[in-house]
Image (cartoon, one colour):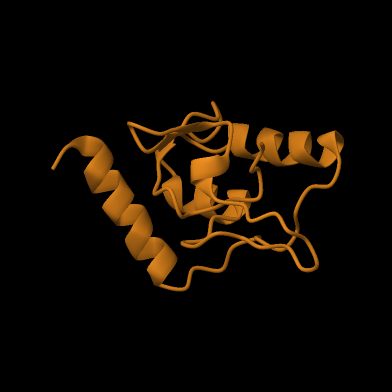
Length: 106
C-alpha cells in the first residue's frame, strides 16, 4: 500500500464515521467557490479532516434535487483518473471516483 492508498483509507474511515460536512451548501457563484477555496488555503496541508469538512466531501456522488447532474470526483475537472487524486491545489488529496465534494466542476 503506497502513501496515497493509506491517506485514501484514512479519509474513507473519516467519511464512513459520519463526519459532519458542509455538503448541502453548494457554491452557486464563482465568488462563493473562491470563498471556499480561500478557506481551504488557510488550512495546514496535513489537516485532512478539516479539509473534508470545508470541501463538503461525501463518500458517494452528490445528486442535486430536480437536476439530471450527478456530481462525483470521477467527473470533476480536478480528478486525476489513473492516480485517483484531486489536484485542486488547495486540496491535493487522494480520493475515490465515487466520492464528491462541493467544489465539483465539469
